[in-house]
Image (cartoon, rainbow, N blue to C red):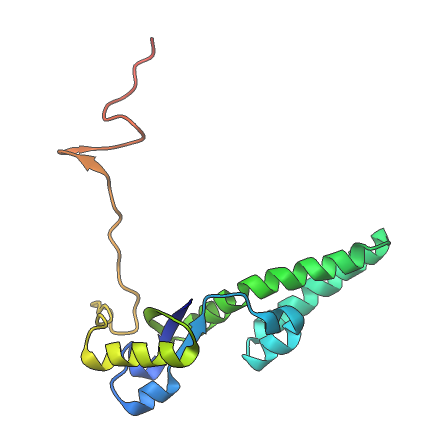
Length: 169
């Protein structure tokens, strides 16, 4: 079973209300991406992650030049390490990239495949079981303001492990 993160398009306002919104829904699996591991540059380009294409080229060219100076099996090991790291983080980078473009995370579902995940998230969306996006006074596109969690015991604020200043013996 894989966890899928559902993202709604920017124009949907964080909700899936119509079939047009449902058609644009993106499900990002939280798993290793073999295609990103094997074909990193093409995977980034396919998902239109242009800053990552440039970053990938800059990092790999720099590291490969450094590895060639070292010689031996270093270039092969360096390429393998970069590819494995991208394979593990590609889906997180994709989700982050979509969020920067205005897409909204509307929910997480656990499913055996993408079709099952889509069916579950749409059933939740159309039944009204998904929470509504947080509205702020700054408008619907503003990020919600969060209140920090301040640990307290009674009326005393907890700082570190004690409630009062520590006395030295």
